[in-house]
Image (tube, rainbow, N blue to C red; front, side):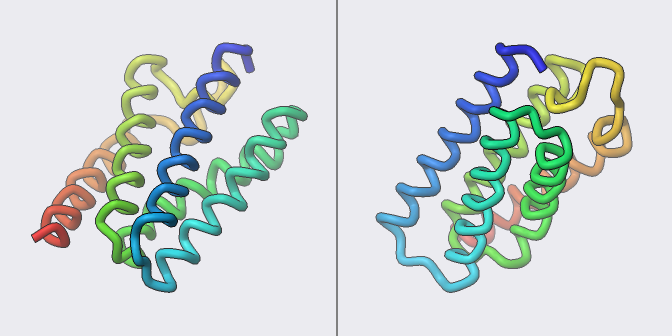
Length: 138
């Protein structure tokens, strides 16, 4: 993985962590919201360490775990701001897929975790998540 992608991924991850920290500090969250955020932090710590040491197995494992957490977030998160951060991440991922034509965590010749089916499912999920955020906001 190039140094550009490492910096970009690290910046995105740390920015999301900062936003999560702000929400932890200013919002009164429910237990599942706290558990979600702490699980994200654990995965992000493992992810960043694995990026630094180029531990491909841990990178892939944390990559999949974050994606799974994003997809279950609509069922377990109560706080609209936490859901909005999840929506932001899914949007960033989709933009990177379009710009790069692949998942930037994959090597150039790998296609796993990226394709038309996953893109369509993720787009539909983005719409559902947007609807749920709007519903919770009202």
